[in-house]
Image (cartoon, one colour):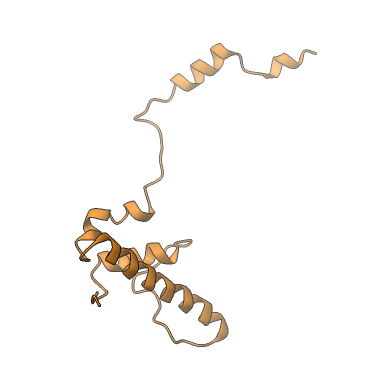
Length: 107
């Protein structure tokens, strides 16, 4: 028995890769900073730096909320949007900002 029998030849590999075109390829929907789009988020704050601070503070509150649920205390407000299964606090905060659910005051 030859070990080479179970391997694909270069010709077979090229044939397999040519069966799937770029239009048929399946990709996951972009998430994170691209959803919601950064251009829409920048309209919600005076600068990109203010947006970063705003989102980071809210993400910290959401994270603290989840930690306090385990302790039975509710000092912080939880997510204002329905979070995804494994959605991170920063993504939740960015969606809240984009939806206009939070008020940003500079100072």
